[in-house]
Length: 296
Ligand code: URA
Image (tube, rainbow, N blue to C red):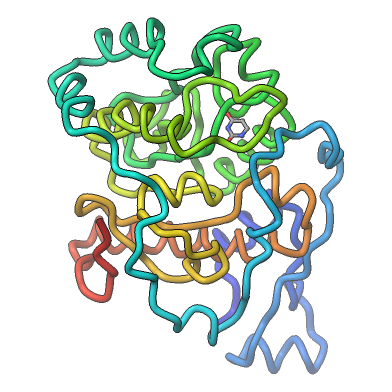
């Protein structure tokens, strides 16, 4: 299939070059435009932040097995993250947005409250169609109280732009997005989230998803995936196919911080965005439901 205008726009925003270029008349281009394989080529885009000052919650395990063989493997039965305490879920179950925000601000459920400058609740439209779930705030997020404002956030914003989305909560319903993290507090030194921290923080994310009622969730990075899908399967084995969280279609993709260090995987992330956009289109036309893996 030739690239659609939207796909080309998404690639451009993410710094990916496509073959064939628009209007190309080479034999190869003609052949590919006629339906033969096309492959995006990853390269950094102008002005992209350098890979160094990025929160590094993503361990190398994101460099997971790739390809169709990997995708075909089933998810393990064993959960990757402990379920949050039922009473903790209940405690936030009835909270509205202001009460939930206050509960997050005042939270002292784990050791991260000792080192945080402030909690990072989330940003976007309270009834967004799209929900992005990242991992945990880094230094800049801790300073500013907003998720994804550092280098990884700049890439995330480019990815969102490619989808026609805007974190400012303006725009049409289909352009709205809500961005949240699995943890609401920064782990010191940007270390990986610990299982007990994830367990104690998860009720807040659960309630955020309940309130937003997104039509699609994009889980970015392995900690978001562990929390939402309860699997320790690497990203490379989970991406490329739809999942579900509480009935909501969920797409797994690489964390933007990981992508800044692993530019070739931007092409795969772009495929994931296309999958998510396709699922949204299918949902809008009432066609979603079959072929989606139910998890959790
Ligand atoms: N990485 C995340 O997962 N979330 C942020 O808010 C910033 C970096």
